Image 1 (spheres, rainbow, N blue to C red):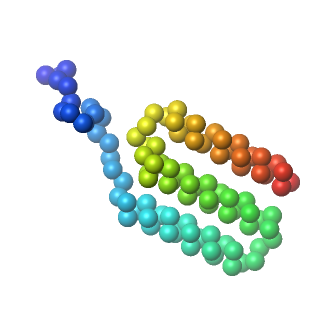
Image 2 (cartoon, rainbow, N blue to C red):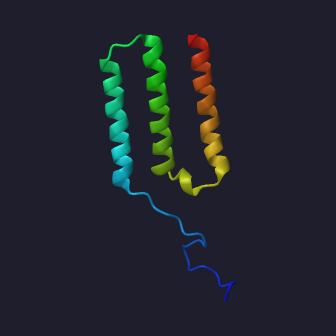
Length: 96
């Protein structure tokens, strides 16, 4: 019985599904935080890295949840994150 195949359409590892309302709530809170940061009228060299970090987190969350990267192999996530990290590094290097 231990080698019985999983039913059609199901893998042997059960995956926990994230509530879409939770993802929506996190994205909403991040957007509100972006707006609040811009209302403080901080210097541009402070606001830009904060907004870029929030945007990177939001893009990662959207890719992981809505583009279903969380169900894929880790290499696909690495392929997504590596160019984004390089772009962030390049922007930071050129800004300084």
